[in-house]
Image 1 (cartoon, rainbow, N blue to C red):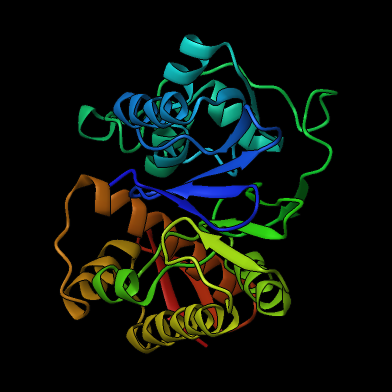
Image 2 (cartoon, one colour):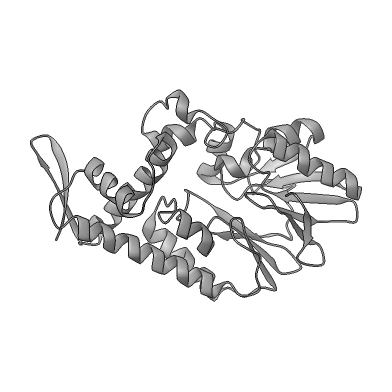
Length: 292
């Protein structure tokens, strides 16, 4: 873990639960792409800097999920580096309590206020800041989270953040987190058509050919949608639907899975309703969902 792998002339990644990308801007100065899950990840990433004689100029955050910004505060305090993020992701990075609050839909109980959902806050500059490395291309990757992006380095390596998951991950956790299903599918279609020397997803192996994995992720979304429609042959409330989905996929519910899967299923319901495949109605003070 935290081994350094080259993927281009100036591009690397640190192998960690959520990969940390590295772009070497000069012989001695680098940018991180994300910072790992916590202070320990930041410390181990900093050790790699020291081993290679590199100075950290900045961190480019793809999005604000805690496993991608958890090392921000430590690295910023230790190195004085700038952290760059855009849109809503910048707000969540400055005020990370927004993540568990958004997922839960209210103030999060203590079981949700931990490092996997609640990162330490950090100071953020927008991508439009004059010190952002202009040679880096920003690639919009909406769907997984609000304003998630990827980055293309000058040596043609594309860092894809969380816009797709490995087959192994989806076999173990079939309902991967999605905020906006329509935007997510649009992103995957665009990713299928992308060309690059190397692709580095945060939660899948680096590869020269990304289209097959993108197609697999698209098919997984269709599978989940069809399962929801099948279960909603009879009107169901969200709690009953969640129970049936957890049972079908052999998942075990806890607070973390309840908010992550629950939020995702609500996004599926909104998408299926907006596309005319589900209808929603209130009955006896229940919100019920039923296939059209």
